[in-house]
Every structure is written in structure tokens, then in C-alpha cells.
Picture (spheres, rainbow, N blue to C red):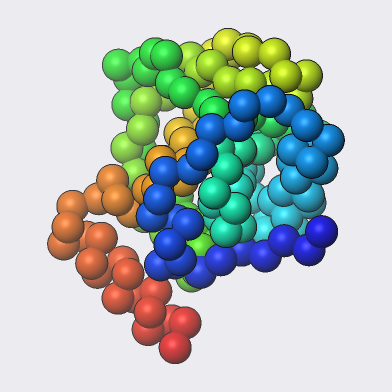
Length: 164
């Protein structure tokens, strides 16, 4: 399957993704294809809506050596740390721009894994940031939705000028 990043403001990027009821061979293949796209970007995470697929699926690999991908269906945050960190975020859906975003340093998540089993996991640093970024996509949000209306508008205008 050839998957392509959809440009913002594609409707799939503004709509809550549908939950996955079970892990099928099609879901496993989609995760594999998503990992290929993520690695080509290059990136540390990718959500299905970024490809125009309205399913609650994400992959994250924030490891230095790569190959430690977490495959998630229906991820949800159970706990977020009080400690907040600021980090640069971007998205291939709105090319050529990025912004500093505040996120919790650590999170506990629950998701359906590649074996079809509900799993809980603690993540910190870039792992947590990327996972929260992907969960935003699954909820029909972009990273810049965490900015003030003024900053968000300036970022989008800048991206539009750079893409023109």
C-alpha cells in the first residue's frame, strides 16, 4: 500500500478517529506501512489520520538507535506528570514550520498493542511528547492547536507563504 501524508486542512486532521475494535492482519499491515512512512519523513511518530485514515492508530519510535517502535490502537492518557517541558514540534501535514509546545514530561498510557492485548506503559521525555502529539492527531487536533489563537494564526500564515 502506498501511503501519503495529507496536507492540512484535510478533514481527517480535524475529526476524531474511530476506535479499533480488534487487531487484524490489515491493522498489522497498516502499522508496518506507517512505520515506513515515519522513517522516511524522518520522524519519531505518526498517526493514521496524518495519512487520511480515520482510525485510532499510531506508531512512535523515539529511540536513538531506532527499531523500538510502539504500535498503538486507541491510546489514552491515564496519568500525566505535573512537570512540564517545552519542546519543538512540527508536522509533515503543515510543512516548513514548527513551534515550541508545552507538554507533560511523563505520561502513563493505555492502548491496544500489536497482539490485541490492552497494555499500560509509562513514557518520559521525547517518547511522552511524541505519543501526546499522536494522541492529539487521533482527537482531530494538530500541535498548533495548543498555541494561542494569535500564534496559531501566524504559524499557519507562515506555512502558507512557504508552501506557495
